[in-house]
Structure formats: structure tokens, C-alpha cells
Length: 391
Figure 1 (tube, rainbow, N blue to C red):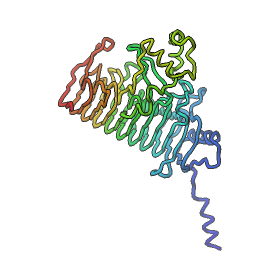
Figure 2: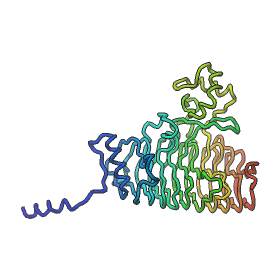
Figure 3: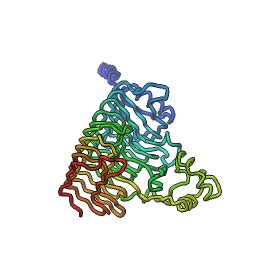
Figure 4: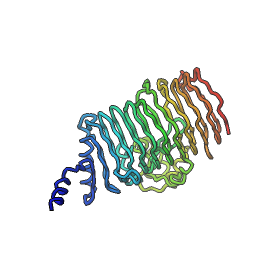
């Protein structure tokens, strides 16, 4: 009896305060509990095999930026099987560090078109210091899979990023009157010092995109290496004939609806047939491109500097394998395969003191295209192109 009492007295001393479980709880209550726990910061350990959540947004519109005051770490108790989070979206903002490891994040109802603001990104991360997004599976987004903002350093490594753009949203391109599907696996905006490595990316419109809202931004020291980006199977998931009529977003609808009315004698509304949509596109010389996209895209910013892009393997793109712009970059040791529709292996419009060397390129119309454009008068300067091989 004494031993039994002693053991019983020890049990309450063991704390499982970091564990998060929703067994026996409905989705709405689970979502509210998860948001509350996230906003408190600290470590959250997912112990259930699977979760069903709604919209997880830690920043209500009327609150200040960075509502999570402390470091945040979300992980699974079982690293080998990983807890599955089925969620409409997960948006986190923190003034300190964000760490997400060993989870499986999956978009809930990604084919349902809910409007531009709600479906932009499955996982949106914004922070003031360090990001570690490592060893996760993130898949099936309505538009983009992961968007990262404002971190000063960190790692994005060992993730599987799969199937972006399930809502079938399109973007109208004025320069060539094409209608292009959108869906980015990993978007980096106004963040510095990140290492992006050993990720497997497939079935997306764009693999890795680095950009800034500020045309004079000077993002620096971003390393992109040893990633595999394969879009060879894009059309198997997103064939042109499967694009629903309501995938044109509201801005495009307002701008071009009069043309579609003339074409079809009725307004462009939900649930019209895709064949009618195709007929209208053809009549007005819109080009619906198939599996249109690039693998690694460094945006047209002349002050992006000291990027290293090396040892990546990209396959099955249409527009480009790697587009790089900026200064003091090194692009080397990449293997680039355009597959059936590859246009350009490596492309650039603004370069200064950049080295492009020892890359292997095949199945492209132009292995390397360095092209000065009127809108970017800086053009190509002090750039070395060395020992690249066309296979």
C-alpha cells in the first residue's frame, strides 16, 4: 500500500502542458483552442494522429502586428509518422522566432474557390527574427503553399512541398495576353539570411520565388541549394481542360467581363462550362498556357545581393529553370532539364558581378539567356559565364 501511495503521489508531478490534443472535440472548438495556445507562444507538441481545423489566423484585423509575443515551436510527438493538420489556412505572426518541424500540413477543400484574400496561402509566416521550417510535408493549397515574410535569418530545409494551385486561379498577363495558372510552393518576401535546402518540390506553378514589394530592396545572403523541383507531372493534376470557369479572379472578371459577354451573350458567372470559357479565350486571342512556370525565380530587383544558388535539380518547367537578378550572386552546379516544353535554362535581366558556372542544362530552347530590357536599363554587367554544359 505504501508503494502504491508513493507512485500515485508522483504522477501529478509529471507535466504534459505542451501537449495539444483534440480527441473528442469538434473542429470549431479545436481551432479556437489551437489559436489560443499559439498566441501564448512556447512549444506545442501535437499528440493526435490527425486534426481537422478551420481558419487559423493569429492576427485579427484590429490588433497590432506580431500578436505572438514569445518564441513559438510547433512539432509532432512522433517524428516518424508526423501529425496531420487538415486546415483551411494557418497564418502566424510573431515578434520573435517561429519554428515548425516534423508536421504534415494539408489544405482542407483546396479546390473550393473562396476569394482572393482567404485562399492566397496555406501557410503564411511573418516574423521579426528567426525562422526554422524544417522536415515537414505541406501539400494541396488553393493557391500558394508557403509564404514567408520579414525574417532576418533561419532555415527552410528537408520539406516536401507538393501540389499548389488547386483552386485553379489564373493571372492575366498584359504583355502577351496569356492566362497563366498561379501557385507558388515557397514564396520569400522581404526576408534575409535564409538557407533554403534539401526540399522536394513538385506539381506547382513556381517552385521558389524571392521577391520584395520595394523595388529598391536589398535582400541579401540567401542560399538556395540541393533542392529538387519537378513539375514534369503538372498537367496530370492541372490539365487545361479541367480549369473551372470561376477561376478568373474578381479583378480580371471586372476588367474582361464585357468581352466575355460579347463572346457568350451572357455574363461570366460560376458554373458555366469550361468549353465556353475556352471558346471565349480563343476568340479574344487569350492564350491559356499549360504547366506554365519556373523552378527558381529571383525577382527583378537590382539590389538583391550575395545569393548562392547551387546543386539544385530542376525538371519539367516551361518559362525558365532558374531566373536570377541582382548583384554579387553565385549560380553553380545546378542540373536543369526543361522536359518537353522548356524555354530557358537560366535567365536574367539585371546582373552585376555575378558568376554562372558549371551548370548542366538540357531540353531547352535557350540554355542561358541574359537579356537587357528597356524597363531595366542596368542590364548585364561584369558577369562571368564559365564551363556550363548543354547536354
